[in-house]
Image (cartoon, rainbow, N blue to C red):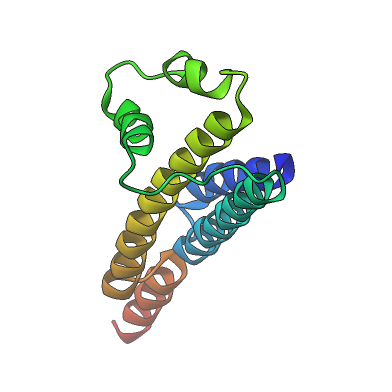
Length: 138
């Protein structure tokens, strides 16, 4: 679980760093991050299932409460601390599942945006090629 979470975070960071020179690599890394967080989501669901703990329904009051935390201003770990450190593994895991779902939603939006931009404008390599091609014609 630690590896999947860390990998997802690192892929986002690395993709962001590479975005200036390689949109193709950025897309790949954001896709890898999405895969890592998908893996983490399955791990949390397995955790609950193996311990016979309840997975919150999407529209349950507790899930809505946990998801609403994302809309508070000045969010930090403290915002989620009472859930994550509740001492109840069912509450902790379900809160983290809500966070992973939110992360995946945002990554899906980012991927769609990056794909659209790449198709419309190409990446750095394509722009360099077109510039070289134009320079040869002139």
